[in-house]
Length: 219
Ligand code: DC
Image (cartoon, rainbow, N blue to C red; front, side, top):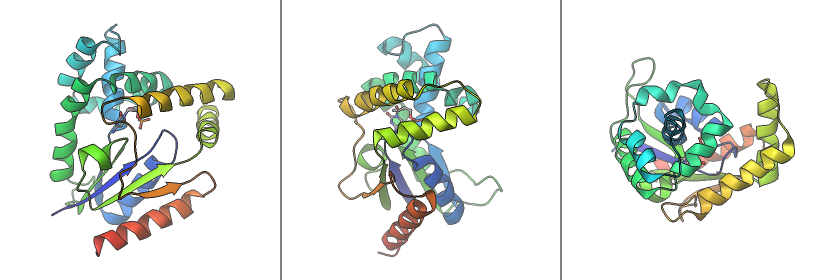
């Protein structure tokens, strides 16, 4: 059985950074599942549709080309908000489920052409819904103020104009939608290691994550 690592948590908690480092260390193929939802949300808006409309969102989800996942436009906050709206729709979630499970089951070759030792998926419902039998599950979180501060600084560094209060408001709005939806809400699996990175460095969080995964791999 290939190794499957599930990492869930709210936006800007640090799960993406931890996932990149774990993938490199353990030779895992990595899937950022938020990009799938961003691809759908962005596609709906680009078509002039409404991300809260089931037919509009499902149409894009059914025809999603994985090549769009490399589009830098998916990284914008507009794409994030649209993603969190289409992610509420159960039909959209089930449409994207198969791709994620196939990735976990048959991870693609690594960039250098080597066979991966397994897969690492990060998102909101990987440990609870997509891969409930994952080898190890992590729930990476941080206070909303710390996450908004990180996102605010990131926007400024990328040369965008940003207002902290607005970033905090957007973060709260997205958290409420991600946690409050009926279909696979953002939640920690019972058997996940919870890492609160509010007062932790990236190195510290990564070290704790790696130690936990290695303990699960040898269990
Ligand atoms: O991780 P992210 O910020 O790129 O995710 C964008 C949105 O996609 C997030 O607000 C909720 C949704 N999402 C989800 O519902 N389930 C996932 N597994 C991943 C993301």
